[in-house]
Length: 284
Image (cartoon, rainbow, N blue to C red):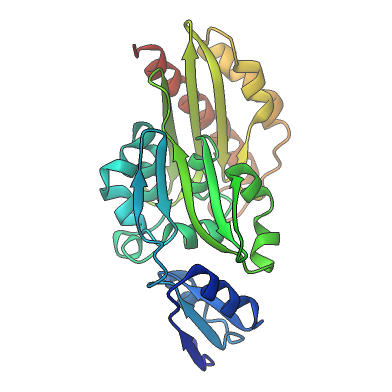
């Protein structure tokens, strides 16, 4: 419960919302409220409700899809223009974030702000061509990978995530997402995502990310470099992943030891790359 909240605002513009939060160290944005209410931060005195700011829509064109930060996770799954994008990996990842009831409440922006080390949505977005949109209150656009790297700094300055722009993948490309959890529908212990674009029968673009094997979801950049331009086999993929995996030092907990997490990252990343490769090379 938020027992010390004294003031509730419901602004109608992004500028107004940002100024209200940035002018008070005890204020915060209220999106779906799933995380804020659960945390019950006693220091919070001011809530700035984002329902009327106009950030709950999806807009699509030939180049891509813009997803507002107030779009709920369940809407992200149900809407064809977002849910079916990039072989449906966004919808698949969103389905692993929370239970159905919480997905009806939780928003895209809130999920990305509080994302943990194994967050499936962050892991998938790292492999797609995505820009994050935010305001401080001036509007900014940044590559999603930069947002992940500097997320804590942005949170401290109370920027407002306004949405994400996902570019449509080319025809000869594919994405895949693999996950392991305590049950088939549970939150991931470890997950992996891959995206490949094929040119003249070889992977011209390769992106691979894993969640649950580091402090935050992370791209396997060395593996991407080694896989690009190669006729992929299971053996080549396994070998290419090793330099990147050697740099990961996951911590262990009740869900899985460090050794388990590293091995699952190895297995799931290999599966994701090979699945995306097979789909992409079969497209004309």
